[in-house]
Amino acid sequence: MQAGTQFWDEKLENELAEGQLSGTTFDRYCMVLFAGIAAEALIYGEAEGGENDENLFRSISILLEPPLSVAQMSNQARWSLLQSYNLLKWHKHAHRAAVKAIENGCSLSMVIKKIEEAMSLKK
Image (cartoon, rainbow, N blue to C red; front, side):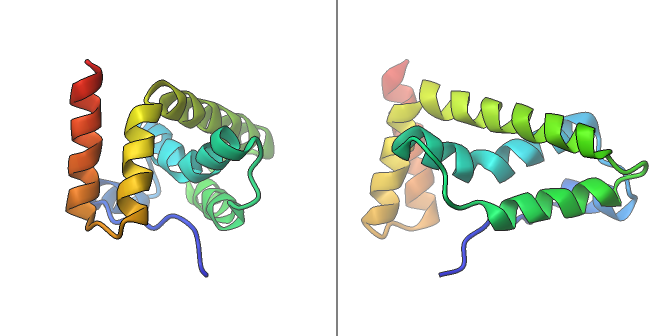
């Protein structure tokens, strides 16, 4: 089974083509990229996967102008993982709804609907 995060985002693609990512776009991208690792850590207490996501993060980080240093990559990865972990923890009801919908074979639109329903019930 192949795991990892795949993106298609026009803004992200355009910014990458220019060799520049805005800070906001890069932060959001990294949070999504590390969300799978964060989810594993939250649910199982540790994360075993994520190697493909980490490799993708490194690849993007060195393509930037200027490229991120090893220290900057480390800090960005830690920050992104923490942000993703906290969002999943704060919204665990929505995360559970998404997992259940995926396990039941729901379409992406139905998974999104279940997340939205869980978020609206929590308010």
